[in-house]
Amino acid sequence: MENTKKTSLFNNGLIWFGAGLSIAEILTGTYFAPLGLAKGLLAIAIGHVIGCVLLFMAGIIGGKTEKSAMETVKFSFGQKGSILFAALNVLQLVGWTAIMIYDGAAAAGGIVPAGAWVWCLVIGGLIILWILIGITNLGKINTVAMTALFLLSLVLCKVIFIDSQSAGVMVGEAGNALNAATSDISNVMSFGAAVELAVAMPLSWLPLISDYTREAKEPVKATAVSTVVYGLVSSWMYIIGMGAAIYTGESDIALIMVKAGLGVVGLLIIVFSTVTTTFLDAWSAGISSETIWAKVNGKWAAVVVTVIGTIAAIVYPMDDITNFLYLIGSVFAPMIAVQIADYFILKKNTEKRGINGRNLIIWLVGFVLYRYLMTVDIVVGNTLPDMILTIIICVVADRILSESKN
Image (cartoon, rainbow, N blue to C red):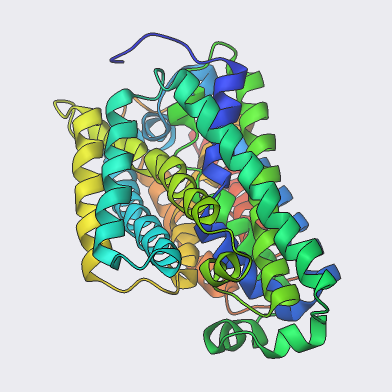
């Protein structure tokens, strides 16, 4: 580790508050509007409980062993086997970095139309500043930023849930005003698919959380605090997005802020929530790069990832991320299922092996199962069934192999 300074429970809470406070999560929340408020809230709650329990278990593995997320993958897949997942993780984090910068720039441009590329550069520059300061040195800067974002988010909630209704906006009328993209996606979304979309966000953090819990003074408590804080804030962001679509008839958060006259306040929410979330993506991409090649400096790799993400955000359109979320789920849900089975149930550790072929095959089966379950309407989504089945396969395979040796 470059810095041996340990993070406190408060530091970890702030880190994951920033992770949950995200424009991407608000935008995803707008897809829940056609379910109605009651069903939408239930889907968000169920999805986040499932996702955050899995997030907690992943964080515990890294916290107790003081290993980064991709280093813990070696326990189940071996030294070389872990490289596959580290590479996939870097790719998904580059994608997330680009998506977050794109969303942040688009929203900021809706308030101050300086040009999307200008906002991409501004946000990318601030993320690089956060990276250079470093995760253990943000201290008071992060405290001030999170406090400001919390207060600004309360203002946004007031605008959506109180002011819009005081102005006489009816739920039914607002529903008819949803934009075409949101309606097309949500009209064919079942309750189970909505739950899965709520699981998807915490699931996307599974390959990252250990990068932060490993640096905590009290790893188990820090993991619990991180998970609870993230789960609550993420749910809050989903609800803001859903509420915006239901009560104001808008799925574009920037337009809501403009109509409410938030101006600079709205701009600050957009820019800094994007920076605090995307910083974690880029930072973890750097850490995962160290797993692929030990000579890489994680901090500077994170800077490179941010630069690539900024360029991609300028060049490519990234308006619908649902397929991207499901792809992440199909890769990393069975991966962490294998890890959970090995660490918590079987007490296995194969990090000294080159490749654990059996577990790689089980992961592949889990990947295929996930893609198949996406075609089946299950009320709790498809991540939980996929992981349960993958864990069962792991345990059964281990028992069969053990018996064959006796």
